[in-house]
Length: 286
Image (tube, rainbow, N blue to C red; front, side, top):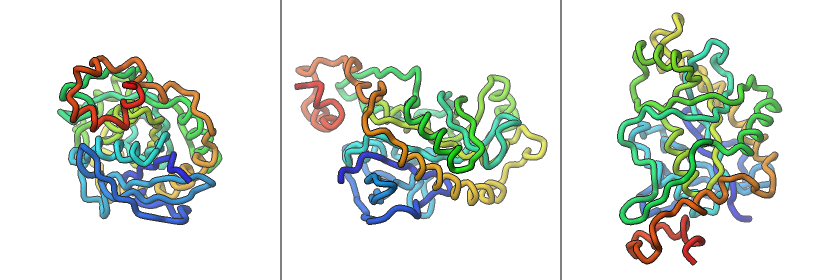
């Protein structure tokens, strides 16, 4: 059975207990090595690939992640859809710790991270006005409700650099801007998934209120870990439910994101770069 669904596990979500027929698969990409081996297996009738975003033992900071290798590795495995679980801080009173948010927008506050497969002689500009797959978002929302979670659909995820948490001034500013949750990883994944024509959705797991809240003005790892443990159980149920609800056909815009995005004439592309990008652009260069 072909692997068509990917799962990225974030802080606290390092495994999927329901996964059967497990096999570790190591992938090498033109962009280096992913965070670790992909754990492939069967889940709710689908063949899936699970990747621990921060590596075994949580040893990679958000800024150290090789986002390109992680997403390109999924592409090489045949993955067409990715569910990404991520711990976040809440910027709104109504988004309480242990709630689930399915954001539909991102705001970039990172510094110099590589967020594209292109360059080095090959240029492409994908549409990113709507950065999350609308179909997977609906599936994730339905799955969260079925799993008994309190879920909020829509909203903006502020992606900060980290690894430090926000200053009070930053946290207050993001609230004034109308942002909803804050994390350190998902924007680059979403951009690269779109370039790889992979459907992508974030399942944001609220661990704390960030430092704007008077009861959370000193966000600590201990506070977050306690909520992560509960969130990880919820995330496992949601992802399993979601995979069982994935439609067979893809009728979203993600599947053809590169169709009109590649600007460089094929004859002008460096042969080595064109070869490296073959899994992404090959079908458009026939």
